[in-house]
Length: 297
Length: 322
Image (tube, rainbow over all chains, first blue to last red):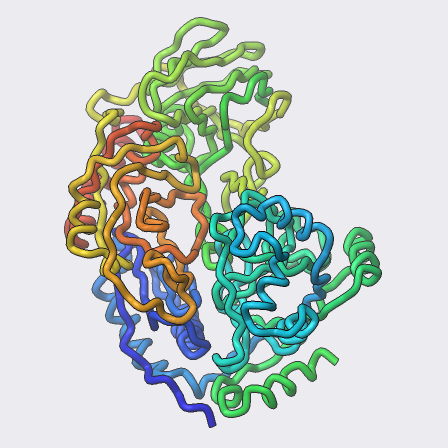
């Protein structure tokens, strides 16, 4: 059984007259993220008048409120009470989904982009994925891809720009991939780039600036403000906090097939409902992950 | 219908803003200077948060295909109908076939052009505001371009000649004070770093848009530390966290950035303070080189300032028969 890190008391801070920011832990962990999910879920369920926005994040969360409707002191007391109720959150089961995201690693578009920004990179003579593989001690890029796509990822935060998921690797810390961000951010990143920075994977939802290392690209749209594609009839953003992601490596031929499906309006991300139970995961990460991914078969 | 002859530098459709989607990275958007939006709308008989045009630094040129009542508030940029000057902070009539243009900006940064009936683009997630980074809302999710045709709602009872009393117009200065509540990650600053932040007169750089306003000044000293797992190596890095609207982040401990209403919703830089919601209007009217002091208030001070702001908007509504 995995030993728990001790739960430290949350740190509360006012963000002007409309925000309260709550840091659950200084360092990133699935436990801290799960507490953020659990507290914000309870707050969403209660939804007191005057609460305007509830934003769970990696190891923290924030609430935007209207202090003319909800007294700041009252909100603070409520959040502190929820913190106590949730405790270490290990016993909570979170209803969520497993999503399969196809990835063309080492694709031509991110490769072309990264070559334009070599002057901003730690290792100008390697590609981003070669650099990521080397500094994490993998013998080859293929081994690195095997590790990246071999275990699931937890959507620990959605944001930065519309619909961008931050993904945290569901493996014990000693096996986690860590890659620094670019020395200076790029001014360009292709849409749907699969990126990596610090301990987080991400998928860029729109083309634009970015500082994460670029590992590949997915043909799966993750943001559609026009809501014309089939996965977006209910909402324009694919990802929700707590979604679980499995990356599936594909080759160029498969990429082109899937892209043609997207363009024909036939493509669906494979998504299955699951209930995620943190304690069961912590007790046996590899076994639990294997069972979790069964639902995709 | 309004036809865009020239779009100006960057003109977008904005209203009171969008609530409830920030947890998915979709920020509030809406007019950066909410007070001036409110004034322009009330002048033409619209609800205070109706959709209007926000023009930055340089006004657009607009051709009207129907009669309307128009008001321009915010930055000083004299409106002209077929080349003839009209007052600001006062409603005036335009007729079908008239062209509305603007003189050069003389103070402030953002003008709000309200038209009786409001700009009638479709609501997206409960708002007509443009969020250009996400290609969402407004006019096809982007700033206006020449040839665009803006639909206008119907507006019974709009009257020209309404005016905002002088004491209810903002003072558009080149030296401003912006009140902040310290906090979030301000413990990452040393005593000297904190003092430098509050004692410096900061200069707004040209990096000043709907996402953020970046200020030039001294480097802020931080407290040394061992980086926590998941935060980057730089002392200004944190495990990526949510960003309050108005929060001030300091990447690399230099050039603080105030995040405004199209903010990125989270990221890995320390934030050290948050601008009061009402003072975001002051930031919105800051043009590059505006000299800015950050003045610390506590939560009670912030709530008192909020109450003053509310009183002022109520007086504005009363003065304009809203």
